[in-house]
Image (cartoon, helix red, strand yellow):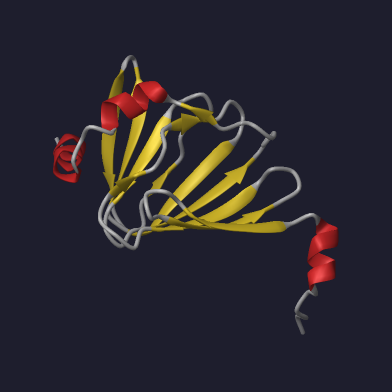
Length: 146
């Protein structure tokens, strides 16, 4: 029979929790491993919000939409390419590719970071931010569907 781990057992494993409410109102519930890998549940309790555009040099990311809609954006050849993700869809940006998400109202996303996950492997992408931050939800949705 499984047995609940004590706080001391968890601390000894190096696994930590870090839960935050972001500036845009998004809620993030994190479970982080000592090797930099981890799991994040992202919830958007309000209206549509963009996250922060970024890339990872080596960290792999698997993003699953629990409840949509969500618009994902990647930066390729000097422009943003947008795609609509619905409930059950997933998104796996390659290392080195700037990416971002716009979470629709009520969206819930699971993100798993794995592979080589060194500290500091989150690099902002102002180029992608400049492309997507100016877009309303409706504009981004139109680009994603078109």
